[in-house]
Image 1 (cartoon, rainbow, N blue to C red):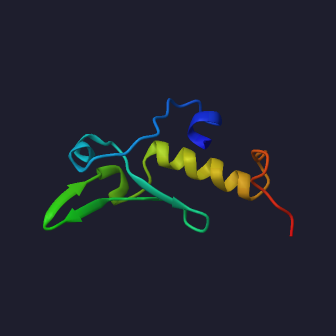
Image 2: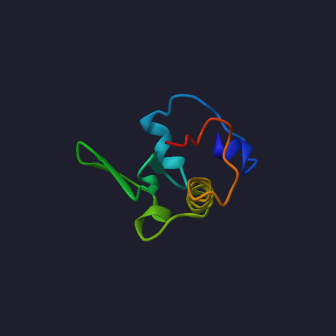
Length: 87
């Protein structure tokens, strides 16, 4: 949602297959507490798939997503309707 609606990126919602990962420039995992965390390497049965942009620091796209998501969490960027609930 954030990539498409806040950053104007073209987004595909689909399964990603392992053989596609070698073509990725960046990889990240997201969650409420983790926000978005870069992935530097995936190891599957001894096979390593590396994402150089995640080894030392966040890549450019991951950083934009992180900044936008934390901006929403901190109230610096307007949140999508229904994302923030006052308790």
